[in-house]
Length: 347
Ligand code: SF4
Image (cartoon, rainbow, N blue to C red):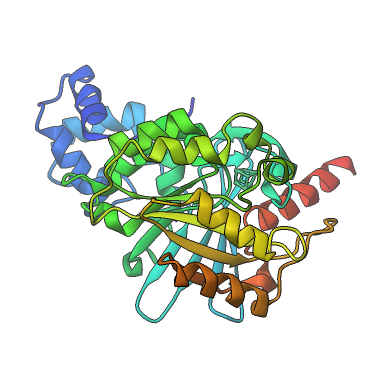
């Protein structure tokens, strides 16, 4: 019988574990220290626990870290890691080193049910929600773990569609007994699942990035079916209910598709939609995906967009494409792996 993972449990869950085993309450804090500060990989490495405590823990639990299965490195230094999940599927994490920061982009689900037209993960369909163990393992088992300065939840899956585990993972990253990171080092993205987005805003302090991709209802519906349920207007209305303070950042991600959402009318539409919201906009160059007619806008058009938005006081940046040579767009590598495995099974 497989053992339960300790890694990925919150302090209060660890308290329940030790209580159930009849161990002293302070053991839970010691375990949290070993897991999140001292980075042990086995229970036997938790050397300040009594022998009896270690034996009892070992009977039922394991630390539960899983090293990446493989990785690819791009010419620009981006590294894409493939991790296996409990149901033998694959998720990706992309490590993006820059001059003064090293960011890890992590996944929150295997596949995704949101069906965005431009996304490779959407083509896998939804497979499962990652547990907090599987979300955080992408950080803990990363060879570059100790160099990380930032984490973004922008890999495979819609984080708000797995809000319980995402909030649990955020608690572990930011709690004093956990990794004790500032929430300002974390950015969580959403396409705008409003009820869960409200929970995220109320129960965490991490930054929020909302994928917009079009200010127009009909067009956004084509790109992102979520618009049929939560329109961009509804998402922005919800944001108006909160005071984000000076420290917490709201940003809008806008992938630019040639001839689709990159006209001067789109700039006007964006300005109207974002009116009065303190935010920044990130314009993203589209990585082409196989069998899709969508193409990325050229950089001149992107600069026009950036300048128009900036002139109206919205801080706007153009995001470089990273790791195109290793399929660093979300879901590409794991989809390729899935296709390969399925083909192998067919033989
Ligand atoms: S873009 Fe994000 S929300 Fe949309 S299908 Fe892809 S993973 Fe899901």
